[in-house]
Image 1: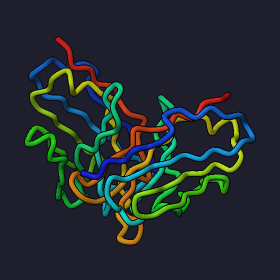
Image 2: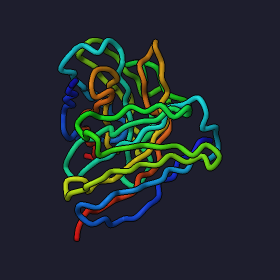
Image 3: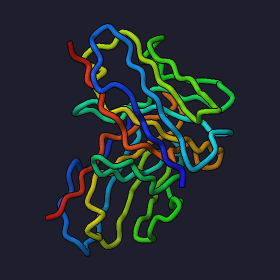
Image 4: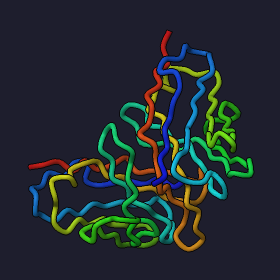
Amino acid sequence: QVQLQESGPGLVKPSETLSLTCTISGGSISNYYWSWIRQSPGRRLEWLGHIFSSGSTNYNPSLGSRVSVSIDRPKKQISLKLTSVTAADTAIYYCARVRDSVEYGDYFDHWGRGTLVTVSS
Amino acid sequence: EVVLTQSPGTLSLSPGERATLSCRASHSISRNLAWYQHTPGQAPRLLIYGASSRGTGIPERFSGTGSGTDFTLTISRLEPEDFAVYFCQQYGGSPMYTFGQGTKLEIK
C-alpha cells in the first residue's frame, strides 16, 4: 500500500523559505507525477505544483517563481520550497500522487495526511 | 481558471439515508472530475474519478454521475463512517487542477 508522509518545520518566519519533504513508501516513485497541495484556513484546496519522476515540473501560475518542487529518487522523496512566505502561506500542506489519464483526466489516488505550517514571527 | 462550486455547504442526514452532493464547473470539463472524502487529520481518500469510476476498494454505495458542468456524488445508504467532508477536483486549464470548496456531511 502506497503511503506518503510529509515532514518539515511547523513554524516559518515571514520572508523566509518554507521547505517540506514528502517520503514515499510501499510503492515506486518512478513513472508518476507527484504534487503538492495546500489548504489555508477557511479556503479551498490549492494545487501548488508537481514533478514527474524524470524531473519535469509544472507549477500553479498564481505562485509565480516562489515555488519549486524537486525529487530525490534514491531516497524516494519529493521536496517543496516556497520562498518569501507571508501569513497567507499558513496552511496544511499535502503531497499526493497523480494518476494521469487521457480517458478520465488526472486525479490524485494517494495522499499524505498533511502537515501544518504556520508563518509567524 | 475553472471554478468548482459545491452545494450544499453542509448536509445534515441520518445513517441509512441517501446523500446527494453537487459540484458545478464554471466551464465544461467533459468528465474530468474526481471526488474525495476527507476526515480532518486523515489523508483525503479518492472515491470517484472520471466522473463515475469508483476508486480501488470504494464501496458500491458511492456513485458519481455527470458531464460537462454538472456533477453529482450519491451515497445510497449512509454508514456512520461516511460523515466527513467531500470535495470535488477537476483537471484541465490553468492552473491544471482546481478544487471545490467542500460539502460537510454531518449527522442529523
